[in-house]
Image (cartoon, rainbow, N blue to C red):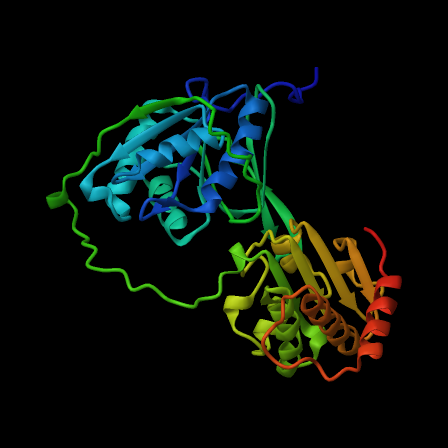
Length: 380
């Protein structure tokens, strides 16, 4: 008689977690504005909840944040737990984790998801330690096994970011993960959507909280790759830091920002705030230029959700072309200035004169370069 476990049956050693049902998204906010990753997670959570035939829930914590509970419903939540109190106005680990722990104990969600932000990582780690349960950090793919196992399949790059690893939490509930911003797609906001909003009480008074927030020192002018709609990114193929000036001109012409691969950042050619990838920012722009970037997993995991990817590389076998919607094979030092010049001329033609001098390429050469590049492009 075979002792093999049927694939349709849960493991015999698995505890009975039938009391735990539903997917809970912890909404992160600051000054009454939700982080985009929260709505992105609600979009992904909706898919997971549908596969599990379970409710999608959200938790909103803060002061005067009732409007975010309504927004959570508009972005897909079936049920929203709202905790408002003066001591919750700014994030502190203890009072926020106490609220979360009490709700998890009472609502018993089978999956809890957080944004992989500084706040989300701190809060998720504190909660996982107290429950205790497992926590998968910085996930880039989420899925679930159908009943009866109902296991969360949380995937992230591993082994020096050369492959994807899927992590399971079989013995504990809830199953928890943090997910990177820009990886998942938020549902369209539906202001007519109705849902249940349940108010819950804060569990700590101000005098019980040791940490005090005195002030926030806000950085101004900081690059925000995650919100950029157009990114012009460069990699090792640029050959040195000076070539990033060429990319900056293209980004300026397009109204975008400059990004970089890990190789370029590690070489000291550009600051870490420009890095796109697993150890940098995960982005979802409308247009992404990958210039002199080979296409390693560490980088592509951070930009593969761009609406349109244009790759420029002299190596026609570079892995980046597998992710590109348009690929241009050739000398980037001729192609990029030609594209920049053509864009500037077209914007000027339509009355959008840009500040700064044009590139030194003659008009005919610029057009010839762009046309040649486009002729060598091919759809993904």
